[in-house]
Image (cartoon, rainbow, N blue to C red; front, side, top):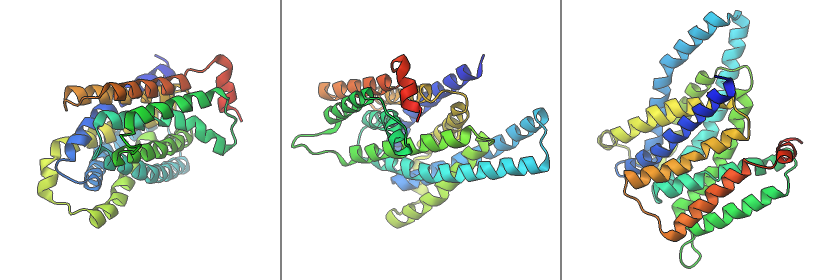
Length: 306
């Protein structure tokens, strides 16, 4: 089994976990505020990853012995990467959690998936050339978003808007992870430090805007544990490990499947329903994100080469 296939499978599992986590996150909002939820789940993810960091580091050193200086360099680059990734994820995850508190799990999943289109568009800011056909996908996604989210009177739901901002923030997160995952770093350590950073930063808005209580957190324990252990501890770590093995076009495509899983789990567990208009919007958005990652042969070269 080659490295790329392993990476693809990791990302497919990641998207499955993330899609189901939209349900847990939505259910958790019945008990605690979004910042309290993210603070607790992030610290759980951090604690879960500590023994994994130790285990995988010992195994790595047995297979690839390093000098003390090399290991120090590995730790420094990994901690630095974890802090930077954590700062970006802090913004993205809290925007998402606030958005989920006032929209459906399925809609939140699909809107968040817009990062699949946003990531190549952001390449323009990095001096990369974007083929003209990408704008067709952008217009498709915008039209799908309109059908999905714009209400009567041309208003947009607050939760939908936060999820759209979340998609932009996650685009930065994907790019930052791609930068550090392809360097001499420890992916599990990056993920561990990432969630410690998110947890610490999330304490501030939690204390400023919410009144957390142990009883409320305890009532939401099942959803918090699910999101903390699986979505944070497992899925985000798999994302970091997988992005070092998967091409930049395949990775976002596989991660975009979270939107499909979010709708499926929202329908199965939360009994959520979408109108015909909203389902059409979902279909158009998903088609746009898929087509954006399945370009013509010469398109990849034009899109990703400066």
